[in-house]
Length: 84
Image (cartoon, rainbow, N blue to C red; front, side):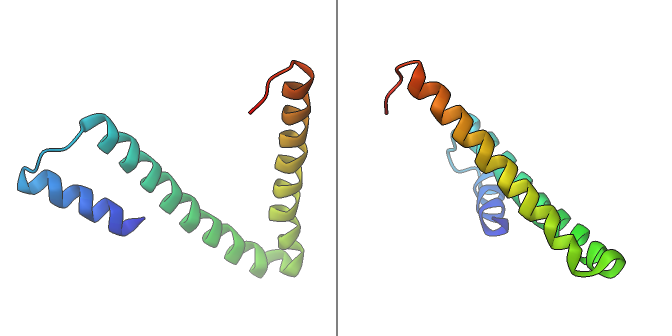
């Protein structure tokens, strides 16, 4: 992700033709993913120091909640007759 940001900045600085909308979306996604990765590492490190291995229940709970939400969404779409 950081490499992608560098490539985009290089293209912009050298004046190469770029699609502005695609560049903006790509930069936003790259920055969000990089920030989430760093933030998760920070929260995990501080949590491990504070409450120990129990901190691992936090990402496990988030993944379980997302899985249940996805399954509910998928079943709702199937009942409405949507297909792939």
